[in-house]
Length: 474
Image (cartoon, rainbow, N blue to C red; front, side, top):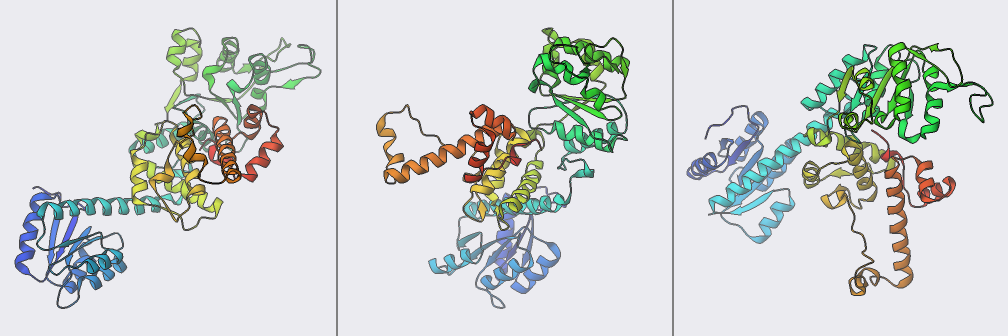
């Protein structure tokens, strides 16, 4: 089997029986895509480990100069990422238990089935690979890439960051597109901060959050008497952004009537406040973002084609989390560190299985969903290691439409008073989390939708230890 000599799949076999060493080497080379080295003593093994850095060490226990259990301890001190496998011709249950307790990944008694030892080595190679990648990713978390606010090292992320930094140096209008939770606001903020307008405040407006009849006056302002209730002049957001940048967030939802006036701003670089015949020149860089299909909206007549081309001067597409590969782990570690500090969980870490679980998940909510998942797991995990069960994206809910017999076990686990209190706690916390997630951490909006005043909503958040930060855009 051809092996890439640069591979990190390296297996060191240690045994003082030379005939056995040669036999096992042939078996491993035939069945595993890996490099194999041999050592006929524990001392020789330690020297090879120091210079060759194997991924897996398969060692006999009974050797003259040093037994396998002592070698196991020395390996752990030298490089804890190496996965050790122990084998012996004189095995007992007690010996196997001790070896596994001391850190052995697996234990095999001679003579063993070749398929079993090969399966064990294959799994050990994968374990070491994941642990080393995990450590490498943690080392990469010292700062967001190029101070852009983005975290990741995948080719797609690097390509996106390079485009953002190049676009930032111009005054061009930028249309930022991507699924919900991919960091469109982060991209806009980065473009502004890296531009020569970065020393001024960027103005942001969430277009669908403003009623249609108010949006025009918010953007362009009005003069006294322009309409009933206009008791004084008001500057619009474009005038406030003069000399700076304005972000039109979720621009796909702007009404067609406002789109026409926005087109004038982009073409003529001037605004006309409501009730005023004269126009005002403005120097504003326009950034726009959307998660919708503008081409479909244009086909339906819901979005002006000429406005689209004015906005789409410099298009940037932000990749979804599922397109970023191992960046999922980079982000997960970044968020874990953030929430460890927030919740005082300094010793918390991911298990190997939980990292595999994160890579296997489908992240429909992208970075925002991942951040919320790590937030909940950090807060709710009751051990020092986050396991796959702590990362469940959907908690089981009680089906109150099911037959009574299906509900009895849930309620009768405790006495009535205790069960009632636990159920109320579960419900209230789940309700608060859901309300905040729907409104991306906006407490006022979540409280309003819940029919609770803001102060009451905040009291419940404090009581049930629910934070809003984890639900906001990355």
